[in-house]
Length: 271
Length: 224
Image (cartoon, rainbow over all chains, first blue to last red; front, side, top):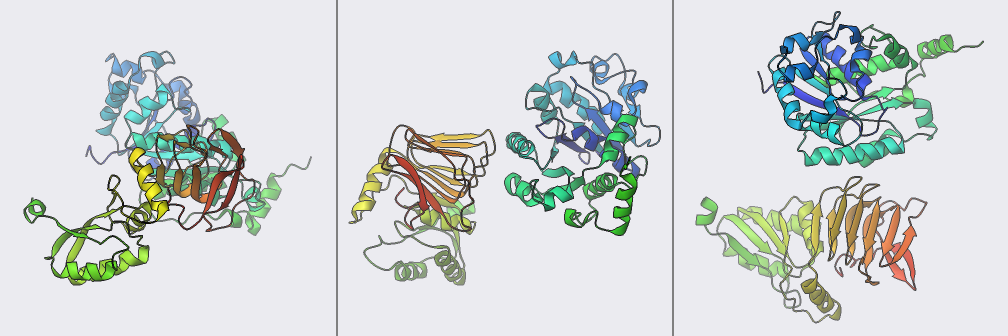
């Protein structure tokens, strides 16, 4: 059982590319497929995975208390109400940054491996201590990047570091893709990105305003059963992680159907 | 264990000017017993096709190649492109009349060639006192610097510095030359704006104090 648990680091290097959003949505999608999933916020300094999942007000204990042995692991785990297969292990308070060591991270994760099939670790931005802690406990990784030069550059750096830590396999998620800008070559194309990063592409996520709405509400898109483009992309990625073969979406064909056009028209604010 | 007991067989090709390697290879194969084989290509420049022929020939005699040795990087590259394990003979003195190869032999003895396999990613820096031969890409943000030449069997998208200790005869060769910046000795140049032609290997060198880029010559890798 223990060896079957997949411990996946979700990282990017650059901030704001959508690591936490991806973690939250994948967590929900996986849980919905019936696998026991834990999401671990390794971004101790600036934690907000709990916000995205709408679990902020239910946190009593954190990983810090578990490590200090002042509470049990199942006391600290916050179960999601609608998706009981999903649990969040909140990070400690920001002061934890100072004393957390890679060993501590490994201890937390090894406690989780008995109880869960998937452990998703939301990695902090950057390549400093927080990143090193998170990497030390991971086995696989998903690198999130946006189709822009700076995000790709940082992702490349992170992939180099992941390689030196022996993380395998490393897969790529291309987030915030705007089909129109790609078609007009104002944005890096999918080939441009995969050409440099040379990683298998796990999925593409389309740019979607609904993501912002869902973040503010604390309800990940995949939870509400939304049919928005990004929600579809997220659940496709989760299915691919489970071994289902789902073809990648073709951005050039997105939004050209009559239904999509109608939906866009409805969303356009004329006044 | 078995490999050690059966004593690895070695075929050494004759030095190129003496005779044809094909005949010599056939003659030597007849004397071999089925099993693993080490092939020393000496200074023969063998192509991918040559190795394909060698492999089919060996298969008939139930021989398998364990290691390819060669004096020149070109042969090593073709051998590794077929997934064969290959190793460069560095210290071996070369007996060739050609003045160019004699120069290389001298150079080789003082500065060994550094091999690196795998892509250099952003933030990584490969540095060596001698020449560098790299199988893989140099991504944007990565850097290679060598005391001698920089030879890249892949794309150069980052920064390359050849002759970092002031050797103005150093050069930079890549299958696709699209660097951010090129440095040769103490000269610095920004990379070209336009994309190079597909499938055209290029080299950068110093000509009258300026870094210029031109199509790579066939022996660029050899004269390293």
